[in-house]
Image 1: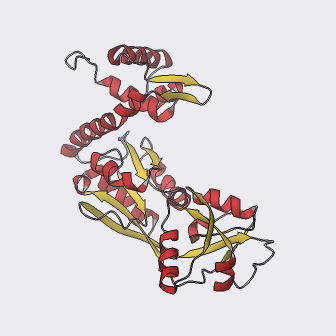
Image 2 (image 1 turned 180 degrees about the horizontal axis):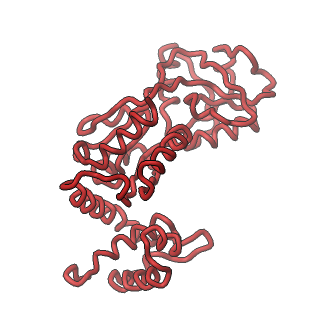
Length: 296
């Protein structure tokens, strides 16, 4: 590839197809016609000497090269956009920016219903994309600009990051409504005798294990999943129990919400951003939307 002759507009095409997994939807997202988008994809493939996206029943799946390129491409677009916006500030009514926020499925359930109406009102052309990634990638994604914010109880984001508390989220236990041994009061004895689901991407399990270690006690974990809503669905159809943030239990069908029979602190849900984005007007606007208009 010769960067001197490469059309930089194709980077937006690449990022849009990667995000949408559909050529028509990607065309609509960046304001191109379907034929123009298809032509741009053809030019992009020729420039990269790679198919980049393979059509499957589930959509346009990225190739290995596309997976390697998406991080640097998003970072480059983010830097360009921030540079263009910076001299004139950030106008939410005119911006077509895509904000990417790292959060769990429980975070989506509480944040998005409050955030999106405010965004639609004040910034009709702005797009919000949520990302679910392993915790160990959060710092890298925020530092590179691939993600604008991270929301959650994320004590591991320290050096180089700013944070702001949004709300407190107490923990609870879930069990199915017709559980043969659990109902009403939930004792420590019942908790230790029960079989548990662990949610690998959350902080509840770490806090539970820490509290049990102080008591020199153990629980029986027989299933580990990555999402709170999956854990709730499993619990609703079995005799397992799970410890989750209270907001993760909202609208969960077929379960009873029980107090945790352990002393564990309330989860402080915060928004985190890298210092490189601290004075960025667009990032400041999004943070204000979350802190003032959504959670005040």
